[in-house]
Figure 1 (tube, rainbow, N blue to C red):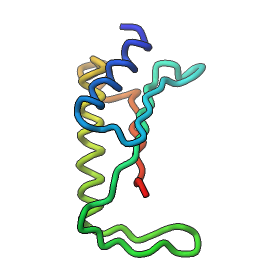
Figure 2: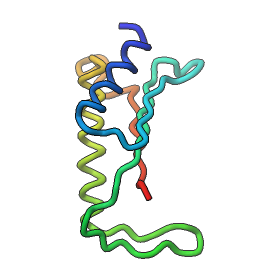
Figure 3: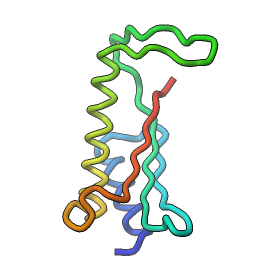
Figure 4: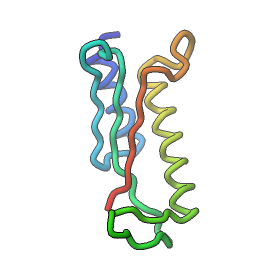
Length: 104
């Protein structure tokens, strides 16, 4: 499968799974051209009790948000792996980078 097909399949699968918050699926450049980069934002938990940002923009994350973040990360990684066809050996989740961050 061509890299363009792989990135298109991953993006399509994530959109169908309901992950459309600032979603970006790209491939690496140069020697990392076989790497797939998945970037997206995760909204905070409905009952968020995270602290307010400090002077550097950092904030303490509550347990509910941590659990949601981990669940979304794991699901996105699984969907991306299945959609790319890289689920088995020799890949075993290699070469797929999932980078998710908090939506404001």
